[in-house]
Length: 41
Image (cartoon, rainbow, N blue to C red; front, side, top):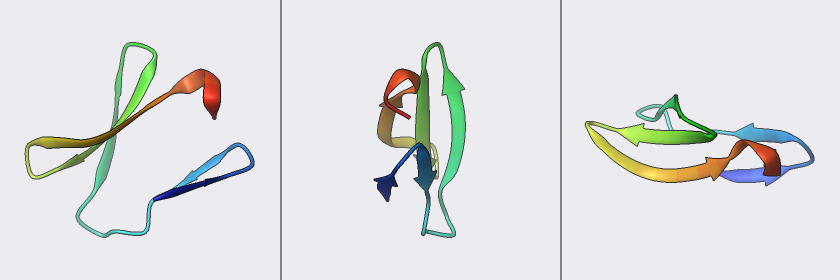
């Protein structure tokens, strides 16, 4: 995953995104892979 401008691109098919408070969380099979604060997007 990489950040370009104000967009979060997810290039893996087995990743899904969820919202946890003020963070976007990238999840893969029950584990959090990455966490991005919304104010950086």
